[in-house]
Image (cartoon, rainbow, N blue to C red):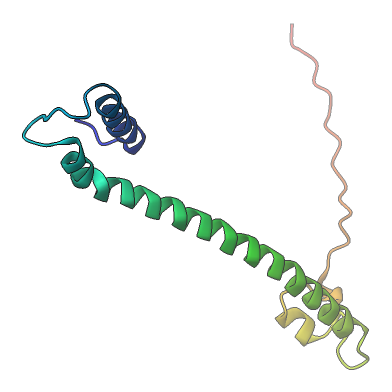
Length: 123
């Protein structure tokens, strides 16, 4: 039997639902409905734990993203201050050390593409 958590959950809940609805007093495989539910509880509890942890992870990621917005605003202000500083500026080593390209090392971005000669098909 392949282990597919979604299919397993469907099988568990369907089996319990049918048993509860139609034959709650009957014993199968030496287990009453309550005993079976007790044996299946760890599986359902693990799923609840996973769902709770997923929600906690989403909340933590949202907190991180919110904090990053504030942090990146602070970083931008610091970089702007470094660029405006008379001793440092956009051409300083501190600016480069902070991960930016110094003004003197930037390329113009201008490129001149060579002309491609039109070829005529040979007959």
